[in-house]
Image 1 (spheres, helix red, strand yellow):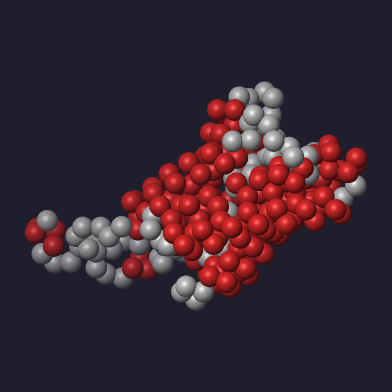
Image 2 (image 1 turned 135 degrees about the horizontal axis):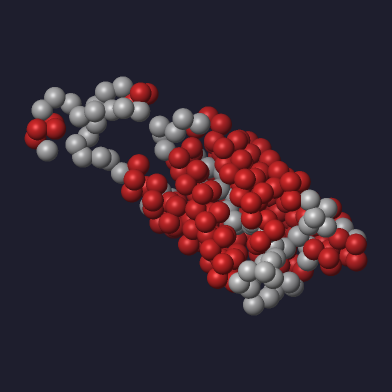
Length: 248
């Protein structure tokens, strides 16, 4: 699949479309009042589509996750650009379809087409921090389960990633909508023209959190340790070989 931009981009488009279509759809169906339903809808759709398409594109479905892979040099700039176009395109397409399906007065207007919103009880700085921390957790788990070849849950990475999103939404949806994803926020905001002075939160917060999370896991666990460990990797207790400790 190396260099197969069309099929990888298509997978990212489908995953990002599904996330916005299901996630924003549940927000409109519940009028944003059922945090549990919203959290599990976002978590489940990611768990399903990462499991289904992760072997094709890695299952990012999130421009912030792609940014994390780019800054750690785990993907090319050209492929990252294709992913971003696909992710934003999928989210906008889903928002357009939701705008056509749902009745405007009963669902679209009250929820702004499922757009995330900042709780009036907190400031924009706190909101960006919440989005950043949630995305940090998400990207850290993505790297631990999907990027790290030693990841214990690599075969079921989608489940761990989906749970991370659901947990974050359960905690923070009442504060910021818990998007943790620039495209998930951008699609409904663009289609519904729901721009506010706080709209930057869902771009800057997740991107900063993703970069910190990706670099933290990369530097702590993925860069080769010195001296190089030997021994059975499945134990998680690899030790330097004879003479290496003294030489170091």
